[in-house]
Image (cartoon, rainbow, N blue to C red; front, side, top):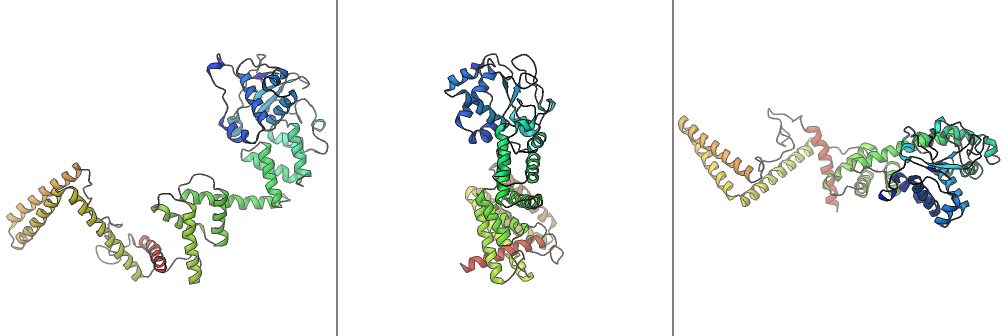
Length: 443
C-alpha cells in the first residue's frame, strides 16, 4: 500500500504532525487499533511512503483485515482519502492523509505528491463516483435499499462514501424511521455549520428523532427555537465574562429563568450586572438573585420584569446615602494618608490656619495681607501635591469620589432644580438599593 505526504530529510529528528483537531474531535471515539493504524500510517507518509499491509499488520500486531477496516473507518470520518491507482478503481489504493484544518474551515485543497512522483488531484476535480472508488456505480456500491440517498449525499459532501457510511444511511431510515426529506435537510444543515463527519450528522438526526421531528417543517421550527435560545445562552455567559458554551446544568438553570420564572433578557442582564462586585462571576450567584426577585414579585403580586416604583422621596434618600458614603470613604482615606505621611497632616493644619487668616484679611479689606496669605497657601498646596506624588498617592486621593460631578451626589443642580445629568441613572440604582435593603431587613 502506498502512503503519501511531503517528505522530511530526517524523520527521526522531527515529529509526526498530528492536528489538535484529530486529537480532540476524532481520537476520543475511535477504536484503539484504528488510532494506532492511523498514526503508524502517518509515520510511513513521513518516511518511505510504502508499506505492504502484511508488514504493517506484523509490526502492529493486528490482522490485515483490521487495517482495511481502519482505513474504511477513517475515510468515513473524512480523515483520509483513498487514492486508486487505475481509472477503473480496481487496483489497490493508496492513503492520502487529509489536512483536517483545511477540511474543517473549507479552504482550498493542497495537491500532495504521491510515491510515484505525480500529483493527486483535489477532491472536487476528481470524477464523481457513487460509493467507494472501487465501484463505478452508486447502486452497485450502496447497500440494498438505500435508494438514491447515497449519490445525493455524496454530491452534497463532494466526496465518495464508504461502506460504513452507507450502512449508517440505512440505519437513519430503517432504525430511526427518518424520512429522506429530513435526512437530506439534516445533511445540508450540518454542512452549513462546517460539520461533515457522519458521527456528527448521526447524532443530530438521533436528537431530532428523540424530539419527534418527523418532517422538515417541525425541524425548522425546532431549529429556529433552539438557535434563538442558544443566542440567549451566549448573551448571558458573555455578560458574566464567560466566553464558552454553557454546560447542560447551566442550560437547565437558564431555561428556568426564561420558561418557569418568566424573566426577559434585560432583567436577567440586570441581575448579571450584580456580579461585578464578586471575584468569581457565575450562574449560581445570578440564579440566587433572580430567585429572590421572583419571590418578591410574587409576594407583591406584580410581574417579575416590572420595576419597583421609586418615589422622589426615596430617590433623595438614595442620594443622601451615596453622598454620605463617598464623604465617609474620603475621610477614611485622609486618615490613612495621615498615618502614612504625618507631614501632610501638618500641612493641612497650616492650610486651615492660613484659611482663617485669609478670611479675616478679606473682611478687613486688607488686600496686601490677603494676597500674601493667598500666595503662601498656594505654595503650600503645591508642596502637598508633590509630596503625595512622590509617595505614589493621587493628588485627589483624599477628595470625595462622587458618582456625579455636576451635583456632587446631592441630586440638585448647581443653579437649583433637579440634576438631569444623573437622575435616571440614580433612579435605577435606587431601585436595586431599596430591594436589597428590604431583603436584608427580612432576614
